[in-house]
Length: 403
Image 1 (cartoon, rainbow, N blue to C red):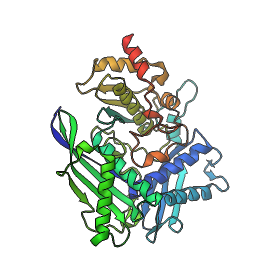
Image 2: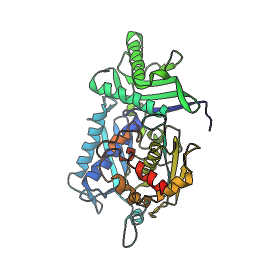
Image 3: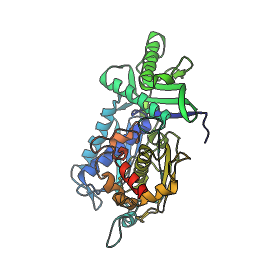
Image 4: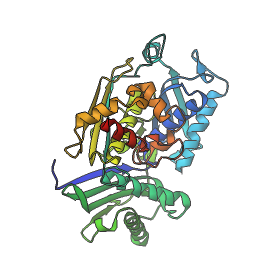
């Protein structure tokens, strides 16, 4: 591993068109899981100027059965979508929560997929698809996340909070951030560049109002990043194109699942390729990515490594994972193979089968819309939300390694 280098990660706000799509898709996941904890959902969303389109496959008791919608179900779906967009804050002529056109093209789940996933007789519930999933954790921040991504998320989350509260009324929903840090001996020591592009009210692209916007962004950065990372040498690129009044789905089409690196580790770790949003937790793209983060975070929290990557692999219709791989990047206090054996021996993990993962983490609940902006990882577990961020496996790991 290199010990001295520059590294960069980006984030996008809840108003970015792709994130609008992710949040809509996950609002549909939550709606159906609130009706039927065993619902099957694969919901994709397209957003563009004054238009939202849903497409995908579903199965949900009491809502959509035998290719038939229950009375009022489609109206509830549309209300849910409009409320999601309203909560983000879009009331613009090019994209308004109350007036955009809406299309619902959801239809029944394939029977051939269902027969592979559903449990029957002596057959355990199988994975919803083949694939590889990665989890990661490191000790760069208290959240055990890569520092570049953690700070990128927090800059935009603070700006969104100020926009919603009225503290920064000149901000509009669409925004992007990017943080470049210099690492020495593997630790972040300086922020060399900060990029923030934010949609804004008219007039904030020149003169005193532009200066006000720039000063505000720098104050947010100062609130988020540790003071010792910032200096007069830090470069700021704030709205470098000059003007950013047209944004969101009116400025660029949005699709579910196009921000998978923002959703995960900012490029600091591998990604298996599958998006998360719009999928119920039988889809291992989502649930196995959550359990691998959970395992990696607990390994670092237990002091077993400073950096940890975990991979799982599955086949559609097969319950048990095909492989488990642990890499502590030379930072482990015990062998990586010993950690693999320890994980395999922890009974409460249910053999890392799809049902075992969902049971241990409590994933069959409407908990997903909050994941769809500012990252699925590095968040604070609260109630049923973000259970994969808990560090309640530390003692089990230590006990398994001591056995």
